[in-house]
Every structure is written in structure tokens, then in C-alpha cells.
Image (cartoon, rainbow, N blue to C red; front, side, top):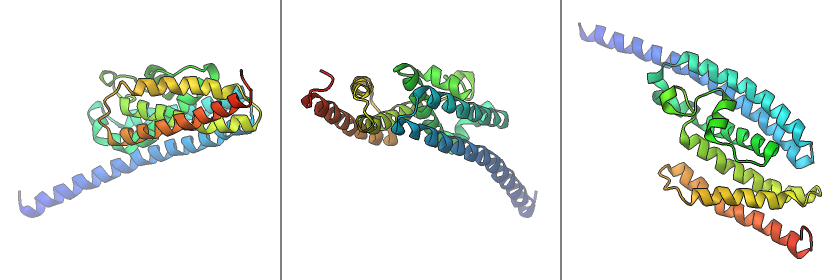
Length: 216
């Protein structure tokens, strides 16, 4: 094979690679759109919208996201998962958070990795194929704590003085759990550093309610 033929083959391979990545990115952009739609739905929390309505609307959007993940699964072979993981990892962390928030609003419970994976239409463990990686699940929990911290303040504004205490207890459990982990991921470590500020914010809300004689 001549040098010209060699580099011609390389150029062809690069072209195939770029076209394949573009297909993956198109699906990831659709997932980002799903998340933006969920952000709009979740704004109802801060305007005293019925939780049941929020969760119902949120699950409809997640069903759309589930279809997008199926498209990714159909595009990729098992061996390509880690090669292209970086393309969808960010949005998966955000959709993991959205799933966890819906579960909290429905039941005041912490969603497991298995539950979140099921809501997104993917697997929970690597050996089963396209899966929810642990970093994305943990990232979702930290995003959840941040959103609940914000909500604890707005709950008081809209007249709900019971929810901040539930949030305080719930986020406290998340904080206790993360204290047991030795985080290697730099992004997760930075997000975890923010958790202590989320806790302080919620503690301040609960304290203010206490000194005003509310929720005693």
C-alpha cells in the first residue's frame, strides 16, 4: 500500500468516525431538550403547584427521554459505551437528578440507582449493557440536594412551613451517606463541597422557623 492509499484510508475512517459522533450528538441534544423541559415543569414547585401534577408531567417528559436512550442503545455496541460515554454523561447526571426529584416529590424517599435507571430506560449495572454509571447517579443526588435547598426557602415564602423540616432530614441523610465515600471524580468532589452550603442554607430556614415558634 502506498503512502497515498494509507492516508486515504485513514481519512475515510476519520470521516466515518465524525459522522457516527454526529449521530450520537444529535440524540444527546434531544436529551438536553428533555432536561430543559423538565426544568420548566419543576418551576411549578416554587409556585405552589400541585406535586401530583408536577410528577405526572415530569414522568411524561422522562418517557420521551427513555425513547432517546433507546436510540442511543440502538446506535452503540457494548464495546462503544465507554468510548463515547463523555458525550452523554453530563445530561445523564441531570436526568438522574430529575428522576430523583420526582421520586422525592412522590414519596419523600431517596431513589435508588436501580429506580433511576428504570425511569430512564437503561440498566443499573455495567455487565447488563448501556447503564447508568455510578458517577452520574451520585451527581444526580448532589444536584437534588441543591434544588431542595433552594426549595426550602421558597416553601416558606409560599406558606408551606412543614416541607423545610422534611427537606432538612432528607438532605441530612444524603450528606451522611456521602461522608462515607472516598470520591475520586474531581467534578463530584467539587459538587460535594457545595453540599455543606446546601445543608447550612436549609438549617438556617429550619432555625428561623423554630425561633418564630413555627413547627414546634
